[in-house]
Length: 269
Image (cartoon, rainbow, N blue to C red; front, side, top):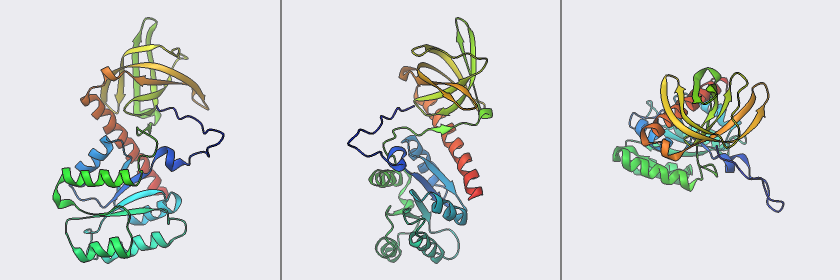
């Protein structure tokens, strides 16, 4: 988990989007965007997909500081997306939202309209150029729009029933569940009143992430009380224990967990 320092007396407190970055949505993503979205997630951007533009519009009125890439090839009437984007940009509650266009068709008239007339901020991306090139363009767009914020790693809050953790120690096996998880660390609620001391090295921790097992080493860097939960231990993974395969499993679980949480949020929007 990243530890953010507090604001200095002569510096204003950063707002949430500066600290935590911006959510990135793909609306009606074509199949090729699946691989692109995975690459963006691996680059530690917070990426979501949805096919319900009405619910997304309501969500953006609650949380406007998001980036949305709209697939304008979806449906029979491309004008729907022109009106949809304009309505959100014209709404006082959601005018902070930013947009980009994804399409299979390199149409200069459409490109001119979206970029010049409608003023989309995140480009007009023709996805038929391939996954690698599309990813490169979108990474550049996200960086330009400061989508990562000051946060270096995406973190997902984990439902108690979605994870298990066990770790052998000289005193017996520590067991618990993961409260939140990133690709570099986690916070854990241990069961049975056990709580390892700060500085403790935990070797061969077995994380069970919805049936996917990952074995890592970590170091306890601190702890805090969480209402209704108890003591939460903050653990950083030892880099030498995290190879590419393990990191991919962590990021895949984080992405799935975030998407499930967002699906619920959109359903309530």
